[in-house]
Image (cartoon, rainbow, N blue to C red; front, top):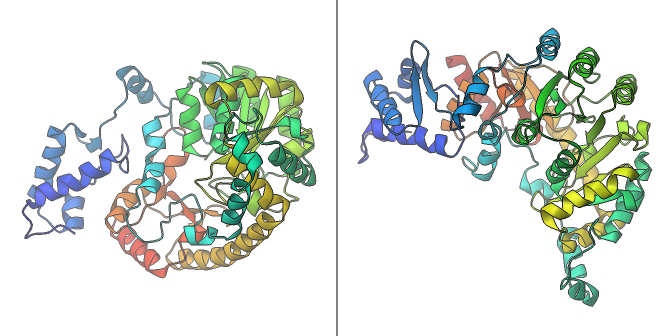
Length: 482
């Protein structure tokens, strides 16, 4: 709320509110500010106060006025990149993606836009449960076995001695053996020597990209998908080739056309409990994608980040392919502890040394203390039992969240499943997200999940953090006012 008795004028307070969000990336470059009339109504001030606030933002170089269009957060990219951004086509949808393939359009993704939600996760807007978060609430992840495992391994003289030297290049041998057994149980034929640990699954994805790709190579990515992956690949100089993701899997016609026109080197897929739709790959689609990879000579990275909360029998391309053209990536941030940052990849034998070289150039080795502790947690069955409890709790939370969303007048664009719901709101969720920030809620608007950030009426919700009826009441009120 703006304070009428404060030392600062209302215009100064309003300008500082927007400036703070722009600097913290909660308002990303290219985002449109509310119209003068909308902003005046929302904050219960006069239009002249809003004009004065926007003038202050203009003077600070934080926004720009576009004739007959309104005020927009300024793009902070170099001019050459900004010019390329202006040439973005609309987000790929069905035949539009084929047209992009035929035209040979490059996708350049702003890393500033992509990290807006992440910065919001690091700087919470308040104590309320945050619907846009990508992780479980901290109280869901509290355990006793993790700290006990750390105490056990740090009390070992062998560990104290090994801490004075670099660890194993591939990662802790005990952990890799435990992970190998777990993957073989899923049907992924990964020996310990095919497994490389990393600092989270994100670094594993980065290692694969830096090993297999060079600037200018085409990379197929699922859309909607995670904007950080789009931006990371774009920052490496890759051509982003968005493939629409449907209930059964990626659009095969679009993939085939990309193969004909661009000869992509890589396809990145979240096969199981896809983010943000919750879809899981069908066996038929998986076989067709693998046939395309064989015919057109590209690799597939299967990101199984949500595998811990998915059925073990879910279709995985790495199982069907036997780690020939596929690379399996996963981690433990979602299910165990976001700050432990333990990830790993399982790769075909002929790629292991190349991937290891890239890891060594980036980090030399990964810290062995937490890897050894994690190995104990997995080996003793504690992680498995913890995941089962999380799945049970999530099922109940999803049921409550879906009921509240439907009561608030929303619909689900996809069948609710997994951690995330892909929700149709009927309004521009970029604009709605700005208004929800004033109420202390961080949303994940649909535009974040497309390679070209275009307005969307969809948003991603976290079922674990949207069980509060108060949130949905605030959401409904603000949506109806738009």
